[in-house]
Length: 166
Ligand code: PNS
Image (cartoon, rainbow, N blue to C red):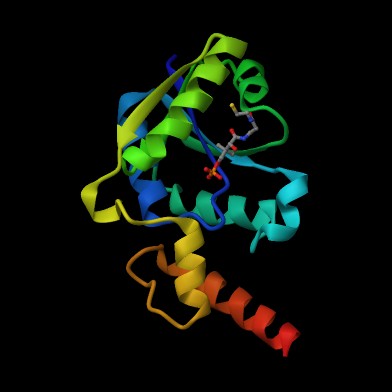
């Protein structure tokens, strides 16, 4: 059984993430999408870990070999606990590479795990959750960048935030 993890914050999941998950699901027998639950960063997140997990579950519902989990602490501990030997990361541009290489080398120094880089499809190479949130906050159209149910939750959450701030 070749099992891989696609880790991330997914705040919220974008079409770029889903492209990588879909392609990873063709390469591995089983893929776990693992949402980092870093409590120190909780205030900076737009969605709770449960909300982020719900959205990804809905997005990957049609993939027979993809599951969703949360993890707290080190990714390598999650890999050990779940018998995972491969970490899949999408690379959008050279600018991603420096930090991703450093994390890949750190992770493989900690446990027996390989990082597999998948080049992001060109149509999503500019896409980041942070930019989706920023554009949506100022009323820009992000409907082509996230699944419809994510767009709906995003619009609702931003409206709630806006109402709470005014
Ligand atoms: O979507 P992101 O924010 O780029 O995801 C980053 C994530 C969650 C994959 C990364 O921060 C991570 O692996 N965090 C877990 C903590 C950890 O293992 N840190 C050591 C990395 S070498």
